[in-house]
Amino acid sequence: MLDSATGMQPGERYTVDNEERTWQFSGFFLDGKYYLDTDLNSAVGWLEGTRFYYDDVDPDGQPIFPDRLAGTVEDLVLTLVDGATLKLEGSLQGHPTDQRKGL
Image 1 (tube, one colour):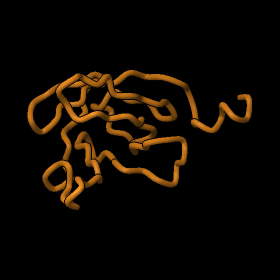
Image 2: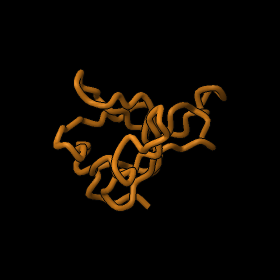
Image 3: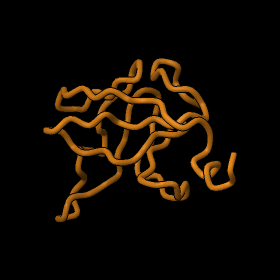
């Protein structure tokens, strides 16, 4: 269940409007999880309330973000642990594989 404070709606995809000097989030949020592509079996991040956890590691095997906590999402704004703020943009409605089915 999505926390209403995030501003996200169930079934809607949200991408991160990346800034030049921040971590590049190339995937999307859907229903409280963060995916890198349309393979919905491979979430690399998730929301717990408004907290956003990102489970990726650097080349040395260390988490990109300490304790995997990347930041918080409130009112469609991702605030990273370093204080940088990134807007979330709603995009394609529904499940990402609906496009392939012609829905």
